[in-house]
Length: 237
Image (cartoon, rainbow, N blue to C red):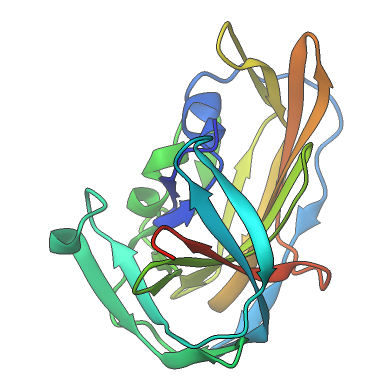
């Protein structure tokens, strides 16, 4: 379930997004709150880094310790398949130095219509008030892995990711659910998010509510909670 996929051009460890929204069934109920988390024309990221290493035997990332080393960090966008032939640099500058991450980026070097950016989670229930607005999602890559801002436990995966939009745009979706033998039942809460011109913080929260039978809830909002940490996922350590 936690395979690496693209979500709005962003590497994410939530494989459920793609099929959940494509197989949605809208429920009635109260309208979701409108959320917004604008960060301005320049995105400044910083903080200590935790090191997670990929375990070939379990196909999972395992927490090792606080990272104390140095890594080059580049901002990129994946255009197509996730290989070097489809990597587009976004600009900005930064690094991990002595276990401390810092990165700054203004207007990115590459954008595309937000309707294309969100095609991975596009279903009948998705609404974009201006699908032609130019946008891009931020991937932070090191020579041996990727850098995320998240908090993970056995039952919770909580992530903040960053998206740039060239103008204000609103995205929304109704409540949707998916049931299948492989994943059990997963429900995505309805959302309405106002993205403001410049950089925005988007939060995706996946919570396992039961294991027998398996069920989970997902919420998608604009938020930038302070308790999340920078996590370095390394494949070659």
